[in-house]
Amino acid sequence: MTALAVENLSVRYGAVEAVRKLSLEVKPGEIVGLIGPNGAGKSSTLHAIMGAAPVTGGDVRLDGRSLIGRRPEDVARRGVALVPEGRRIFGELTVDENLRLGLAARRARRNGHGLDRAYDLFPVLGEFRSRQAGVLSGGQQQQLAIGRALVSEPDYLLLDEPSLGLAPKIVDVVFEALAKIRHAGLAVLLVEQRAQRTVALADRSHVLANGELRLTLGPQDAGDTDRLVAAYLA
Ligand SMILES: Nc1ncnc2c1ncn2[C@@H]1O[C@H](COP(=O)(O)OP(=O)(O)OP(=O)(O)O)[C@@H](O)[C@H]1O
Ligand SMILES: [Mg+2]
Image 1 (cartoon, rainbow, N blue to C red):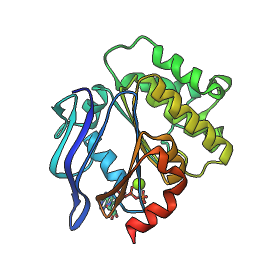
Image 2 (image 1 turned 30 degrees about the vertical axis):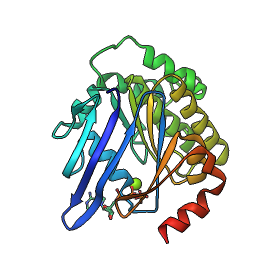
Image 3 (image 1 turned 90 degrees about the horizontal axis):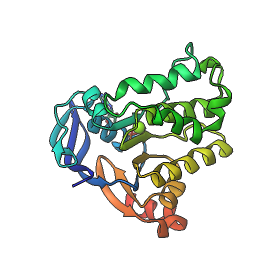
């Protein structure tokens, strides 16, 4: 029962059916990838899980209990954290102040372990802990955004294109961090444009197009990702 389960989920914005009867599941210690072209419904799926998109059908269950109709703060308090696209850090606040904002997202188990974990995982945040976040590079800000989510000690971490716009070296830092986060027993749902790397890392990766799940790939498919995705989306 310990899982985040999306069951026959549909999301609609007016005339646009962004997600159509999508089912997937992520369990502790797993990374599940969500890849697919622009407008496929990847972000809408994450927002629907958080209670921030118009769900028109299906269910989202956390350890068996439905999250539908709950507010995003309530979903966060139950142990689901979203690192949204575009990072949304507070440039006027210091790195440490940004991280501590994560403490407010969860009521239970606030003992500071999450803060230690964020600093352990991303040493650059410790180096710059008293600096204004606005002066950090894009890659450092992304590490800060992921770190802030970890401070809330989530069981389920949702990431929306964490490698967007990052230099290759920093992409490595982010992907290595995700592997460590999985190793620590968290469940990760990873939306990414870097399809091949995602397929190589994730336990399974679902290819979405037009709001529908078209194909599921495993790490053994990584070398063949582009060909398989192109063939299925043709
Ligand atoms: N708030 C919104 N209002 C209206 N339409 C929306 C809204 N958010 C998304 N859409 C539409 O829903 C569809 C799915 O969008 P979504 O952002 O989920 O896709 P995505 O897979 O995350 O794409 P991208 O790779 O560009 O981030 C698109 O047609 C998009 O235009
Ligand atoms: Mg998106």
